[in-house]
Image (cartoon, one colour):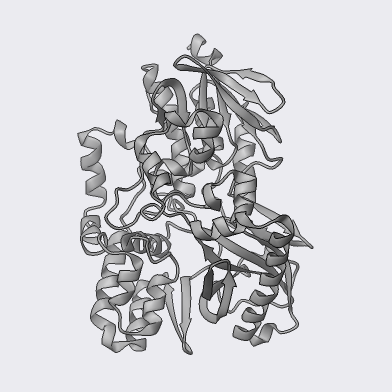
Length: 498
């Protein structure tokens, strides 16, 4: 153990994956330093203040809030949540409006089923089947004990026993996408309800699992938001003896033969390390921090095939509302077409943060709007000059404000823009590939993106982060940090129980 405690692990990136890796490496007895290019850690699990209001960038729901799950234990270990965590009082996933009719996915599945059948009796059979399979999908768990490639037959049997009905979900909804799912319904409102939340090319089962997570109570929203959660994790890391360097950019990983000897910072300083964990976007790792030739073949295929492995981002707006506007949490609605680049958008969403009183002064509310963005949209934003970019944001902000007021007339004279941001914002702050705030989309007929968090040809370099497994997001990020450390322990023939 004496030799182990002297080993130094250097982590690149202080997002959720990097912080998780740092905490688990400390638990395993290593000295740990994390290098983060931004002044505030947290990566995409972030929020910021404008004019006395708080804008939340990340958590729409946090998978793993059920204390009976292994993922909850991981979140607790890193200091994100615990038995005393307070959650938002939210009773629905979202609502969709079409032609004066509104359909809602409530956390209460019985209520959802009853209301949807009342709205569209001709869809009763399809509604009943959908709700039944959402109930099945409540069983879905994210492996959190160890990486899949480290699991033995007994582990797989146990996991299968925990999710006995998931094969039914996969059989019914695993070979169609959300667009296909929508076509199963006759009601225009239900068609939109089924295809609003996730892009049409997403596999339908992903949508059912997302809804099931909320409905099961395993997808609550921690109060005080994303940044507060990130800072709780930072606090845990520092209390355990970890060293965090904020505002320090890494230029490259120093590779000597088949081993990483450390990292070189942008100012030329070289930091030595026994083990290196990269917790940045894989697009930035392969080609920037190390040569692209090290990229795994499946990952390379995903980057090259933009149609089969698309990514998702958003053109987003935050508003101060001069009232307790709490009519909805998230709602999608039709709007007058809005032209952005080569694409026209005629549907958008708004989300009220009235459920968290810490985000706005008393009697006020934060309202955020989102227009879903794709690879194509990112390339449009990237093509603009600074002046064109700023002008387009200003024009779009005015147009989006008009469309919100048209849908919610009660907001006339009570809405003020706080901030807006595009896919380029995510790329600038987080080196996110095409501004994506998730990993690769799993599309029908294509293999799910997943690779071991190791780099062939470099024996002591490990990869953590949401890009190691679709669909990405916070749960994949936090467990990948743990898994990276377990790979180090396995290499050293130590117990991977941490």
